[in-house]
Image (cartoon, one colour):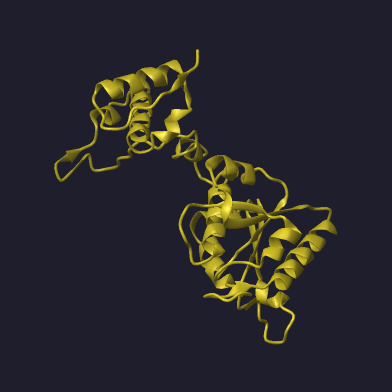
Length: 260
């Protein structure tokens, strides 16, 4: 997975991609992240990449020309090597980012070029000229697109084969199949009177699998019933969910399809 990040604040990107799983992924050659300082593409000697908005108003707007020059130069450099780019723009106007999107990015052979907005926004002519793929990481306001870009990179990179130590880790995580994750426990077996469920100490692998599946369904039903609303359940999941409902979980009932 190869990413180029265009930003006014390179120092926001470097510490994160240089730590933890992302660092190990780069050390293994499974992830490449290049950071481009947008100010280096500004036209004036002071490297100004933002200005006041036409029509007045608070804050500053990122100028179009430095962004256009940055993207065009990056694109030209890669095209000379026979490579293509995929331009991403984290934006509140974009489609919601999902685990399926992360999986799609992880498997994309193109260079992922992520444009980070900042301040009050980006000159609209950037959208008109480049037609970037706009993605929203949530309905809230961030300091800048750098944080959103890191979310895209992290969520996708961990799905690249070989990045995680245990290949099953990404399969069992929340949202990997539109379910929240089951509860986790580790030693000791009791903490302040709270004991680990006996089934997890039993060594019975099938019983543990069923318990985990049921708890994942329970967690999803309680906290994110919307994830179940259009989900087609197999017979086992349907039975487990029926058991959960009979046990009396305080959540809004949902209608679920059933396969088979």
